[in-house]
Image 1 (cartoon, rainbow, N blue to C red):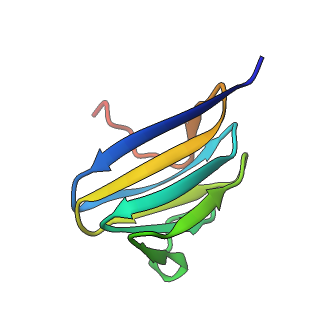
Image 2 (cartoon, helix red, strand yellow):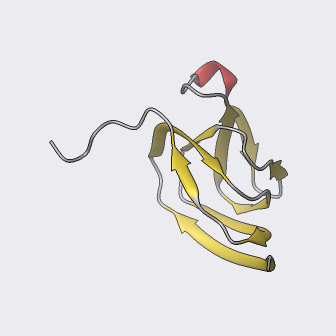
Image 3 (cartoon, rainbow, N blue to C red):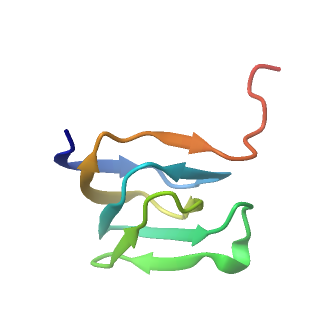
Length: 96
């Protein structure tokens, strides 16, 4: 049965995850402090990044590929309904 969830997270500066991911659940994200950039698509594209300053809010739809870039330490509040999971697309093989 789906359950509502909310979590706070602190992300360090220079966090760049070029591997797009898909989540099974939709999420609502509030940028509490810092600057957060997100974009949608199956390949990282810096031209598609939308920069969101503190006090911004955005939704991350379920089953839609997205990618992120964090330019300074950022605090987020993330809420949604789970269970949750993440499937990376085109992620480099880290085992080499």
